[in-house]
Image (cartoon, rainbow, N blue to C red; front, side):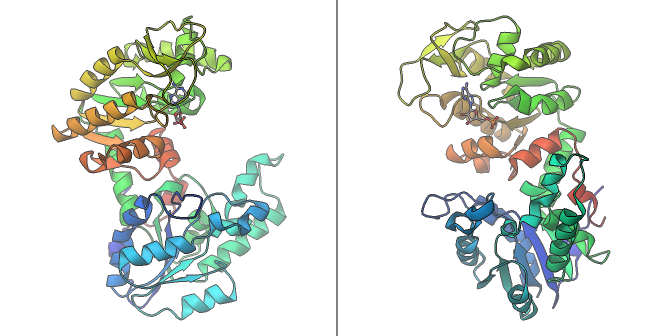
Length: 415
Ligand code: AMP
């Protein structure tokens, strides 16, 4: 069901808590190396401040644990600076994200002003829900639950309305995603433009795909992609497999995979998926192989049997031609996961060639959706982000959406 959008929220003179996903990659000097997640959030922030709202922005950054949380890599301070440059108005910053100072900073905001709270995950309560599965009864202990509740109350107390624009975190029932919005009065819990756009593209692709509907799934492990393969099989016309998980499938077919990555304990599962997939599930017919995964090593193209001293590191030219042709005729393409070890040259070729094939198909009217993470990085690196229909900001979130899992964090928002 469509959710109430921020554009329908009364924001003038009100303190609007906005959960964004500003978890951007940084280099070892804390310089932001890719600000896409910040840029994608600007339409929502602009809408709020230009209509006289008082924006209280919150996010996590990385996974601070224990004493690591005191380290620089996890502070959102550099994000405040970049956000200020991009939005073109001052961005105040307060640390920690809760307590007297945060309250004071929030309460003294004027219409059109922006405040960024320090990393939510500096308070372990933000992610305490993740401990549930580690407890013997699968529930939070009363003490853990009290921490969750106290943090939710503290954060919710800063604002008068709540906007979820953190697509990349929608699959996690963390305090700022799930508990805070439930403390807001009905009618004041809405989605931002980014979440709306992501759900629209992914949702429409799954519900009424323009056919043929083709999924390209790469990456390292079959085990990570089982649920998505299972969920997509009844919906798609073809699934094109690439990446290291190829070799788990090939081994399951009794082929020699040499030194390739292969999950030996998942062969039965791979057999089951091959049987369920039938002609819909396509495996590579050749691979670019090498003796080791190292930049600049000598390579050799092998068929589906790989010699004992080599490993498969990218899809081969035959596979590329087949996949290119299928993508060229597709009505909808969803892509998740690189089809080779694309961070290391010369094993980036298959992934980049597919990125080009997907961009070219888009120019001819194919709906193309890039499901976050490494595939989004590959599309960006190839300079093709503007030439596909949609690049998701959430790897894990888009994968869970494709698996057909509803987001509890979105369901609780107002319709
Ligand atoms: P995932 O996180 O499962 O999407 O996997 C992405 C990772 O798989 C990337 O770091 C790729 O370098 C790696 N990868 C893809 N294909 C291969 C391959 N044939 N051999 C080794 N690593 C691979």
